[in-house]
Image (cartoon, rainbow, N blue to C red; front, side):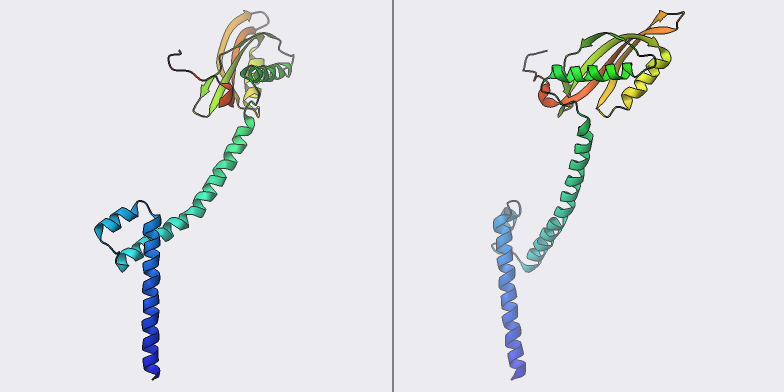
Length: 201
């Protein structure tokens, strides 16, 4: 009697398991766009090995999601740290004024202070797909060691600025000074750069 009840219980468990697998397969087929046509086209009902294979693929896919989330969070954090140096302003002209102010601070920090004689504002343009670039060229006269120190100070700034052009000419041989035209570029948000329309140069 006990043996018969064990067999009927096992049979019921197998029927329930088969029904659960069938429901899982139907659910997967109804929610999966890419897998559904291949399985339905091949046969009306998936076999158990096919269902197990699909289930294993789903488990692997779901297992990858937490890792992808972690990588995305890490990349977002790194991007936020790097974007802290962006020149933030309402217009491109304001951003150029900030770059010019950085040049002035570096020049005034020299010993003796370097006087900026003139500045030229360049045309803002795209820098990659997500950013823009503004450029300011400053003209001044200084000693060569002051110029080297200014370039070092520029590279140590927290803002995303760098020299983009440097022209040097002799100025006063007795005092060993040079005339310098230093162009400094700053990275800005893409919204500050005017979009080029088709046909524009």
